[in-house]
Length: 278
Image 1 (cartoon, rainbow, N blue to C red):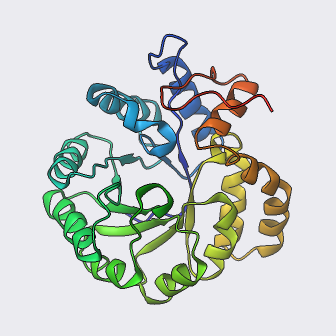
Image 2 (tube, rainbow, N blue to C red):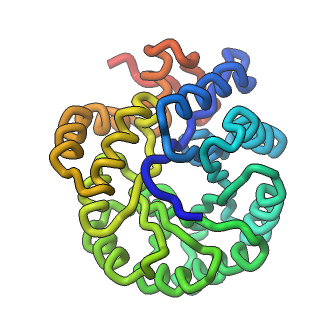
Image 3 (cartoon, rainbow, N blue to C red):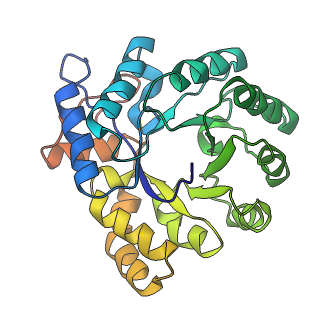
């Protein structure tokens, strides 16, 4: 599967009692698709997945698939810092009809070596026949996937993409310059989309497309197609919003804005809490 363009890392709406608000979740998915988003990513970090029960994790993915009805690809999140559990989660989500690919992040907290990360991702890839998108976010996991390791992993047939959120442009340039042509480098940071696409990236897994899906899809498509004038105009228009979405830990700001828009209630599960009033 070739992932291109803008995908949304979906929030998980909660009701005041802490239960999942599936009415709001389904409406959000439908709005994303109507807004011409390219693909959807349920149960990533933005979805507060660490606080979901096992059954809720599956229910959110299945609800997303049910609403999407095949209109856009579904890249489902399945991560654990225990490799055997990560394999089991990947196998379970791979068996869900309608899942097109799996997003899986580096093991967090363990701080594995580069060889440890290689073996972790290889074990997952060997266990499933779905395409894998690796998620490099060392700011959250304390483990960076270095270019040499990613190049080794890119040789595994069903490892097809990386969501790069290291913030290290020198590293990202090296990756884009060396990975195979059919391997997709996706920005994992809204504000880094233009520079990453300019050196060979092909899209974005976005936080703020929860709020402005049409505009972020247009921005990403313009950049990928080489329409830099349009891409720069849209980037400049929404740069303040991109930055504001990270003034506190994600997904605090994005859920606060969605609540202001009337699309969800601003409810979280601990340890996430509402944004400070100021």
